[in-house]
Length: 122
Image (cartoon, rainbow, N blue to C red; front, top):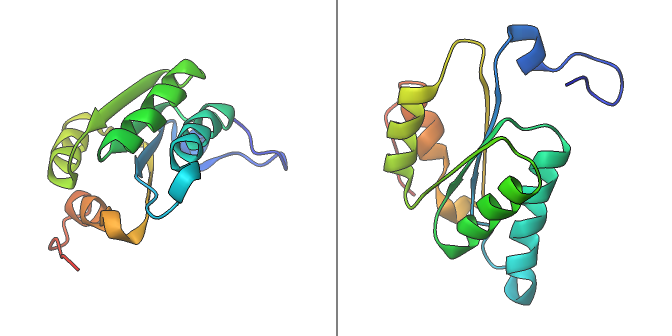
């Protein structure tokens, strides 16, 4: 997928997939469920190839919305350790991975594990 400005995306340039590892957005209050669904829909809109949602019920809502909106592959896991282990088995050369969530979700642990860094807590 080419960016709106006509530039080639990183995933296109490397021949890989666009993977979004998305955790829960904490402290959104009454709008929380719909906000997570909207993120799932947005992932489809921008051409993400695989969404891996990490967390509880809100992450599950995000994954379901992504799948319903056209993301070709979705996954759902409860914790960072499982997410990192799963990603290590499916990542291919050229894949581009975005890891994003509220700080409280500690998804940086996934990025650390995938890049061979020591995994840190809070």
